[in-house]
Length: 487
Image 1 (cartoon, rainbow, N blue to C red):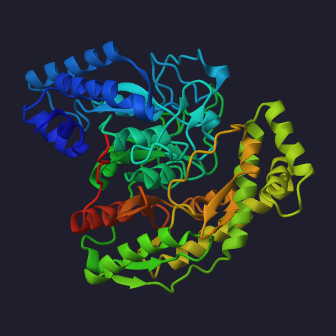
Image 2: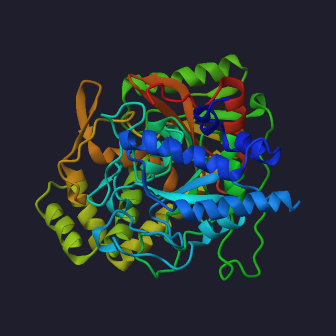
Image 3: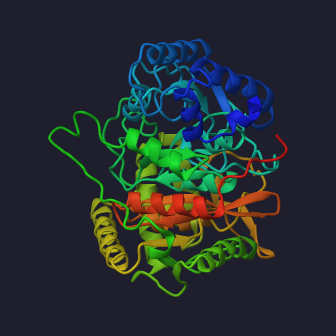
């Protein structure tokens, strides 16, 4: 097996080689480091390295195994971490000039769990400034390019994470998601990602909010990205759980997957709630046809008892209430000014209204979200998973003439011979996020033009095992990640 082939193995396969002592942790890290030096200049996914720290971690992993110590779940696996998480000894910038020199003394809560589980943490991956775009570009580190097509975006905000996996630069990745930030990059780069049910994984030590804040963020979650659905669960089980303080006296036991074979799953498909490019819709339909041929029970007409437009309104109000509260005053004023001159019903006006919302308006949105949660709960009494798009399109060409948040009000996406608002990118992810549901992003096994197409597998609240198991069974039956041929 060549060095590059080893780097493209799944984390589970790499771990098996490590435990069988067919490769050492130090050797595996050096293979990835060599590949980064050869390949990363073309995609710019990995933006910071701690080579010597990683070598110390790898040697310690090898020495522990030689002494007969029990191998940890992530023993010796070389990992990068999205640059929105605190990693001791490395900068944590979140792509912001103001945090260029911020070097946390402690790991984020979930990162500490990853380190304790034996991973060799060696680098950070790129993201948009403030983790606030579906393109990964900032003034500190520049633009990350899609390994399948360098002229197209990797998505965001965990874009560097997905690109690093697709390019064979890391074994596993850890990202975050409030606006599709795990699922969108996984979709655009042909890898797997899991957005957990809200509250299952600690986000303490994540930016935003600013360093030092410890309260959990409504809607926001942290979760794994990988080249296999089996790897997703491997990392999910490591990071699951809250901080020691938040988790005192609490014990959370997730329900088992509802089924262990594909034919037992009751699958709903929903592709007409929001705008969707025809070619991407065809890729999803192709996957659904594959499942039907395998004997899976699929219903294309089933719908949850919700109004998707009203759901999106509640999501936008909640999301930008959260974002607006954490913005520096100049950026906040820029958003408000853009909204004040915009047409009623436009995204600019809706965002400004969300930033300005009163406490009664916030509580009304909270009640609406609880009503949505109950509606979804009734739907998942009859269906096990829902398949739906992740964005309106596949990975689109870079649009980085302006990088400020207000630029997203004027950008447009090409779809079906016309254009749609750039911020329609939030609709399909928000359908899931607003109700705190889990969703696993998986490849459809198809490309649209030069880039992959993914789909999200949505499940009931705390039904993470169900969406992950469905993803694993689909991977076993139909195949999964296919590496880009050009790198």
